[in-house]
Each structure stands twice: as C-alpha cells, then as structure tokens.
Length: 314
Image (tube, rainbow, N blue to C red; front, top):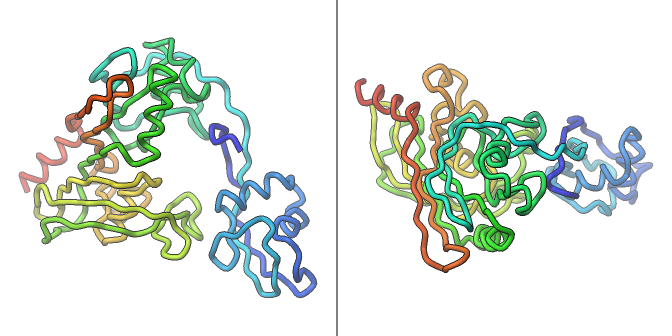
C-alpha cells in the first residue's frame, strides 16, 4: 500500500470466533463478516497492525480457532490530491542546494493527509521553493521526517532527489541525532534516565500508540532534567528511535505526561497550556553532499517561553 495515500477508519469491531469457522483464514473470515470491504482492504489492515487476534498482530493467513477474539478497524485508503502552493508562514534557518533547515511552528501539519488536505508545511514549501515538487514523493515532496502538528521545532527538508535518498537513509539507519525539550507534569527527582519500552498501536483506542511489551517495536529515549518548577519539570530528551508519538508515549508511561497533551495527558491540564509542550530543539545529521557534520537548532517559540515564564513566577 502506498503510504502517501490518505486513510480513514471504519470500526472498531469485535468478533469471537465460533466453532463453525475453525481453521478458516483470518482474511477470509473478515471478508465474509465485513462484506462492505474488499479483500485487499481487509488484508492491508491486518498487515498494518490495525486488526488483532487475542490482542496480538497476526498474518492475513492466520488460521482461526474457536474462541479467538478479533478486534480492530478497517483502514480505507484513497489517493490524495497533489498539493498546491500556498503562502504559509514558517522560518527558514538554513538554505542550500541540497536541503533546507526550517523551524516548524506549532499548529502546522507537515504534509497533506486525512483531515488536512492543504495549509501544510509542504504547501508552503511549494509556494516559496517550487522545485520541491520534483523531490521524492509527489504527495509530500522533500519530506524525510515529520513532527506532530502541535510539536514545534527544527526539521530538515531535501531539495534534490540525491539528498532526499541520502537523508531518508540516515533517518532509517538511526544516524540522525534528535534532541527535544519537553515540559512534563510532575516533579522528577532524578537527574537523568533512559526509557526502553516497545511501542505499538493501542489495542482499544486505535488513534493512540501505547507501550506494548509483546506487540510493539523497539523504542528508546534518553532524558535529563533541565529545569524544575513547582509542579512541572523541563526535560531535554535524545531519542534513539523515531516511533510515532514516541516521547509522548514514553513520558506518559513513566507517569510524567507532556503538559498540554490532549491525547496522553490528563484532561484537567489542557486549560493551562496552549498545546502539547514539546519542541524539537536540535537536529544533527551528515551533509548529503559533503559528508560534513551539520548541527541545527531551533529556539523555543514564544508560546513555550511564555509558559516557562509563568511557571517561574509561581
């Protein structure tokens, strides 16, 4: 399945397998039970981990046994429109023929997707640097990594096909150093620590990720205390892997969720903070053309600094 395609979810659903379906393939059972979907749609959702049997991922050809519990959703994919140039505000920190380093503001989606068909960083890149449309994926040209909508900070964007391939390779092989600043709820007494906990799709709330000891992908995050406040702590984090929502999931798992995080934090916390207080602070990579080490940094945005000033005054 082309990962650039938009998706929407149908479900969730839950089935308990009866004796009459013993030894039937999982994909065949679901194609019969959910006849509004094609066999290929069912198969793709099984492969992507959106459908679980007894709480774990299995292959489409898994042979069912009586009493098996099947839970999940079906992902519906549709091809998006090619993004169009739009005047979007973002800061360019460095520009050269191989790449751009940009400072993504909070609230800006990186590329078009389900629910965000335009007004993204990609639309802004096309407006200011039209040649991007020829780099990499036509639906998200130049993009080699992403930040969540409400996470601010530094990103590198490829400006040539050669640079795009090189940077994708660096990210895939964990050769890029990523450092974040996160304001968390609670007072952490330790000076530093390391979190190693596998991350996978939440078994019930499918829009969320979760620590999944038996069904997750390896994820590691390192943190150290930067500043302590009365009821919050500012952390500096270096992540070794780049799983979806990794920092947010790991910190919530520790009992210190990111302040303002509507998905993983407490609801009573939301009024105090304008967004999830997470910022991509530094990015270290190898120049795709010269091989020289590049260290980029994006200063904290105004909304983050304002919150820190308020906490210092308490």
